[in-house]
Picture 1 (cartoon, rainbow, N blue to C red):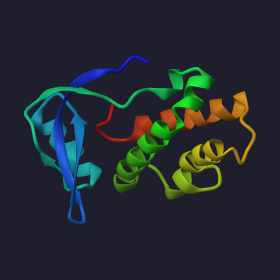
Picture 2 (cartoon, helix red, strand yellow):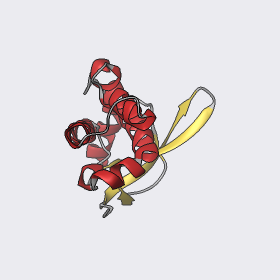
Picture 3 (tube, helix red, strand yellow):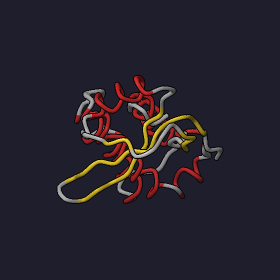
Picture 4 (cartoon, rainbow, N blue to C red):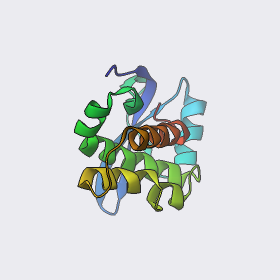
Length: 138
């Protein structure tokens, strides 16, 4: 899988007393600031404008590669869901509902539903939709 490099800044945010790091893609200060505000994580900029690796497009993986990368894909989906939900870009049902992207990924990971090509295609589409609405990650 080819990683995409774009311009952006490193950021940090707190959850309780714990500090986490992230990044925001953007070409200038005003674009980045607008994205930081819309993400709703109260992020602090920790770098100047640099090259950052964006979240991969997992939909380009073969079905087998997708299944093998499920733990990382689930982790990435959780992070993107947090940003998209805080920015009101996606509904809780689209993430956690019976047909939500995270819900479906967990079903496949736990093997509680049959793994079929149509199901994997549907989940890849859901992941791409989430990736595209998550502000500042690609």
